[in-house]
Length: 374
Image (cartoon, rainbow, N blue to C red; front, top):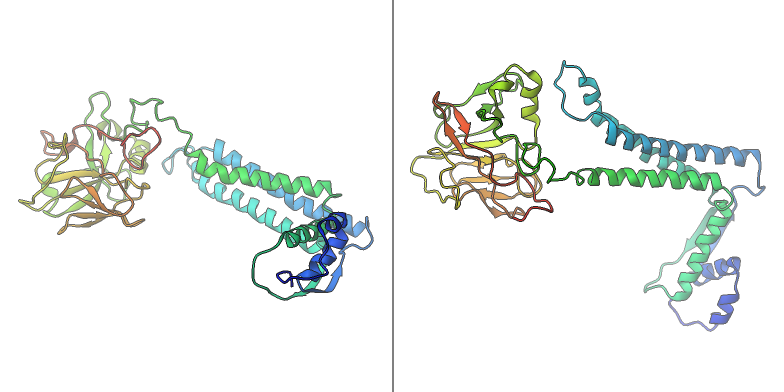
């Protein structure tokens, strides 16, 4: 066994002079391996069958590369902005997510098929029996193992099959770029660009524009139906998710639907029970309207919806990672990975008795980003 002291082990000088075949045999012997069967897949090199198998594997790797390129093309250039059903451009938008999944899935599938076929058709056919032993590997074990791996690579012919090697590298490389594009794609947005508009990271869709009122709108399930909210519409202890609405959007189906889809739009309108003791955040003492408080629904941990409300304890729960926020204490986090309170939306009631936003959130909504200081 390799972990035992043996008198027949080669010296360092002898080890350095051994060729790959000798190291392979030595490694098998030291590891207690009995090679029952070891045969090249193609004893006669350069046959038509061998070349045909190489072309088939090359094709799978090439298809993987093409699928990876298609994924990058769809991810970067396909129309992704929301388009309402029944309007021009809806079908290209509706195909964005399916195409992302299809092209990335095909890239993985073709790469896997190529790798499996290469193993079955070119890696030497081997049947060995090995005894297990305890302890770490010595330098001798490491060198003989490397020789065995190199021998398998040489016998498989990967060194002389440049087309397979290149297409495999191309497919794996493009697939690697595709997997990096997903997490990195959302990190290239410049938070300082257009920082005064609702499309920046510093503001949300509740930002008033041109002095127009921003109402609190109930989502009825019909993206084109507009239902505004009055204080008498909610019972004490009630909770409802609301979205921004502007009168200029009433006859625009696309904007009405888009307002419900924005990630920074959902706000929780909560009516506390009468005489409930509340601790307000410094500088936000007048953001509520009586017993009504409005907080962003976007968790400050990773952006999940904090959609579970317990009215007796005043706790909001994010179901993704179990962060809890205390509505009675300016929605500060009590438990879980979230470290910042939920942003509060300043609200009031207009002359017609409808809830409106007095302004945008005074801090960025959602998870932290690099430029954020709090």
